[in-house]
Amino acid sequence: MVACVVVTAACGGSHKNRVAPTSTRTAPVAKPHLAIPVAPLTGLADPRKVARSRPAVTVKVNNTDAAKQYGIDQADDVYEEVVEGGITRLAAIFNSHAPNKVGPVRSVRKTDQSIVWPIGGIFAYSGGAAYALASINTAPVKQLDETRAGSMMYRDPTGYPPFNLFAHVDQMFGVGGTPIPPPPLFVYRSARAQIRAPKAAAFVVGFAAGYGVTWTWDPKSRLWLRWKFGAADVDGEGARLAAKNVVVMFVNYLGGVGVEGSEAQLVGSGTAWVFTGGKMIKGRWVRPVKEKPAELLDGHGHMIRLTPGQTWIELPDVSYQVSVLR
Image (cartoon, rainbow, N blue to C red; front, side, top):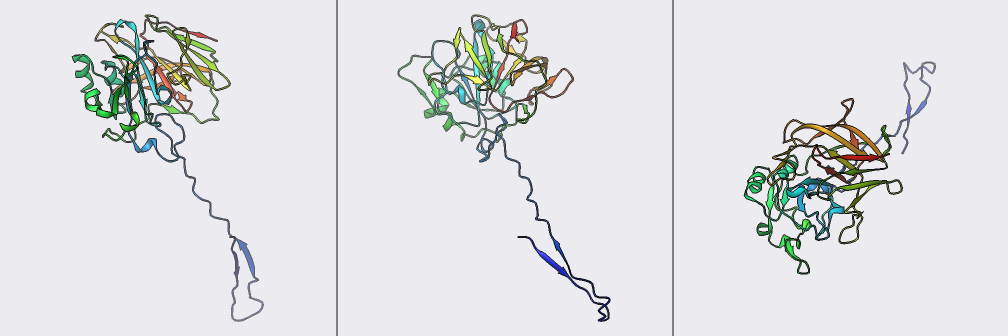
C-alpha cells in the first residue's frame, strides 16, 4: 500500500509562516533478490535443495556390450576411464537424482581414488584386485561393495555374473558419506551467455580395443548424442544417452595405457577439449592437488564455463586420437 504523508509546521502562530501542506509518496520497499539454489554437480536449479541436502554417490558401471546399462542417464557426471586390455569403464556420479537401479556394478580401479577424492561421499563397487582396493582405501569416501551394501545391492536373476549386480542408489545417500553437499566439479555459464568458439558437429574419442565413442550435436535437443559399438547408445530402459557437455581430458596412464594396474594421472595438467552448446573450446586442465577438482582454462587462461546439465568426462591417453567434424 502506498502511504501518503502530510507534513505541517507553525512558527509563532503566524499564518504567513505556516508551511503549506505537502504530500509525498514513499517508494515500495524492494524485496531482496533471492538466488535460486543450484545443484552443485550440474549447475541446474535446485529450488527444494534436494541435491544440496545429500552427498555424492559414485558407482562403477560396466561399459561392455555384455549387458545393458541402467541409470546412467540420471547421473550428474560420468567419467570414462581406460582399464586393462584397453576397454573402458564408467564412474557415474549421482547427487541430483536418486535412481532405484544403477549398473551393472563393476570393480574398482586405481584411477577411481583420484576421481572421487574432491567430492567424497559414497563409492559403490563390486570388489577389485588388492592394489586397487588399497588405492581406494586412501580416498575420503564411504565404501559400499556387495558385502557391505546388503540390500542396497542385488543380483538380477535374469542376468549372469558378473554383469547382473545392481545398486539401489536411492537407498545409499543416508549411509554417512560427506561432505554434504559435494563441491562443484565445474563452473557454469548462464543460459543466455554466448559461447565464442568454433562450431563442432561431431567428434570421435579414439579409445582402443573397439571402444571408441562418437558424440554428435543435436541442435533440436541441444544435446551431444552418444554412440558406441557403431550404434546409438541406449540403456536398458530405452533412454538415449546424451549430455549437455563432454569434457575430453588427455591424460597419461601411469604404468602404461591398458596395462593391468595402470592409473590415469589426474593431478598435474594437460590438454582439454570442451564440447558445449555445439561448440568446441580448446584449452587445458589444471589440477595441482588431488583434494581439488581440475580447473578448465581456455587459451587465454580464463575459466571455461559449461552449460548447466549432465557432463561426461572422457579420459583418453595422450596417445589416443580425437577427431572433430566441423
